[in-house]
Amino acid sequence: MAAYKGHRMSPDEFEKGQIKIFLLVLPMVLLTGLPIVFIFFHAFKPMEELFAFPPKFITLHPTLDNFRKLLKASQSAGIPLSKYVFNSIFITAAVVFGSLLFSTMAAYALSKLKFKGRNVMMQINQIALMFVSCAVMIPRYLIVNKLGMIDTYWAEILPLIALPVGLFLIKQFVDQVPDSLIEAAYMDGAKEWQIYLKVVLPLIRPAIATAAILVFQQVWTNLETSNYYINDDSIKSLAFYMSTLTSTTTTNTVAGQGIAAAASLIMFLPNLILFCILQKNVMNTMAHSGIK
Amino acid sequence: MHSNKNGYWFVFPYAALFVVFILAPVIMAVLLSFTNFNAIETPNFVGFLNYINLITSDDTFMKYVLPNTVKYALIVGVGGYVLSFLLAWALANLPKVPRTIFALILYSPSMTTGVAMTVLWKIMFTGDQTGYINSWLMNIGVINEPIIWLVSTDYLLPIVIIIGLWSSMGVGFLSILAGLLNVDESLYEAAAIDGVRNRFQEMIYVTIPSMKPQMLFAAVMQIVGAFQNGQISTLLAGNPTPQYAAQLIVNHIEDYGFIRYEMGYAAAVSVVLLLIVQIFSAVSTKLFTEKD
Image (cartoon, rainbow over all chains, first blue to last red; front, side, top):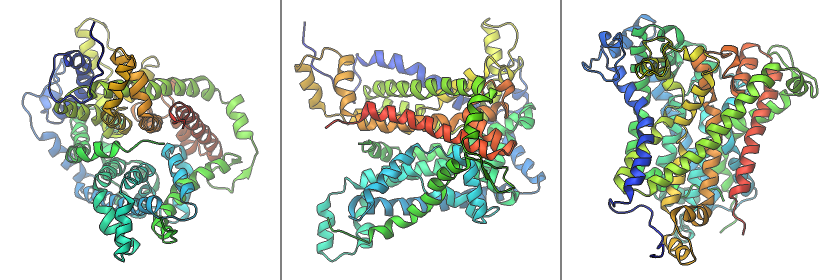
């Protein structure tokens, strides 16, 4: 019997031995993918197919009706859909920008500058990876309230900026930047902020992209802030408005389901597109994601 | 490396937001848990009363919430973790193109973070014969009468668990996949010479030990994701869920905090949740910390 030689991960091309693995994985992939394919089909179903009995999985005559009704529904509600879209884009952009700026700054300092307490800070952030935000929604609400941020955009932006997993991943990546590069920049007379901008930032792009995806996902679909901190409908987020469409009262009607599916698709697509564009960076960053 | 006070300036913005919106809420939750607080009057100190009540007189918690949460955490947290490792391992044995496509499909449910896709499950599990699941099951003859899934005390928790598993291939899964792809190949060759006979032995003796940091990171992400996702049960069936059938600890906090305004008591439940997460992660740390 030939001795076992050890095998390679990530084979370059297809071999017969992989058939078993394909057979194992494919059912799981299909099961996972089907619900998402379903939402695509459902969002484009015309009325008669939504009412069809027995229900059909595939859409035979796709239409944009559901999206049109979604637009109309918001017009009759008094606040135009465009206002919610603006709110969400504004909030998401502000949080993603703020989070990336502050996390990269902190990651640079925690990784490359020597000062008292930095190890403790990193430890605390590492413990905070386990932070389950919905466990402390009450004290969070009390703090937001005390700071006078109820019914302002601040309440939808500031609580979401510090994302421990974002800082963690970026810091692990900054650790890979060779110290000699930074020493050389010091020799040339560079200040810390110049090193941060000109040496560190360009080298950690993959980690920044990854953190951007994670922050984006947190903000774009966040309901907590609009639900608890905002009473004024005109500054609530698109995610919140979409969730009112998918609430029990509307999804009980078949027409409501079509609209709700269209709404879900609109919320889901930006996540998917962003991830597809940036997926290479994500895998690159995840290679350094370990907790040592 | 230079001793460098500028580090504080770089860390400050992140640290400030972290303290206000993450650290302070956790400390406040602990403090509030020793008080009687209805959100209007000043809280008064009651010692361990909330905790004593939780253990001795909260029938809902002991009879439904705790068992549900344990079941959910074991299946979605631990089971989902094992599943994401196995799937990542299988994917790592495939060539790049199918691997990337499969990874994207498996990861995509986690982008929907519960809320965005609530409507999907509501449509799938509609309680009469027009519902997709009912229609299929009746077609293949498994059931004769449609099942009212989302009101049924027998099926609600399993449905929540399935949805939890469906969306559990998240950041942790990607981290494991990246870890697997980066294991040093010479280790496999060396292990084969030392007597490793097959891929299973290889997985246990070579692969896992050489990627412990990623395994730990993934474990932490999995636990947090599982608990965070617990909100899906109230989104599907309202709070409280029918006869508390799928009431999880996260929903219990919301019930007491935002519906009954017994914030001191809710805070005590939050502290219990944070402790549960701590226990899970302490176990993972023990399993995956490098001893050297």
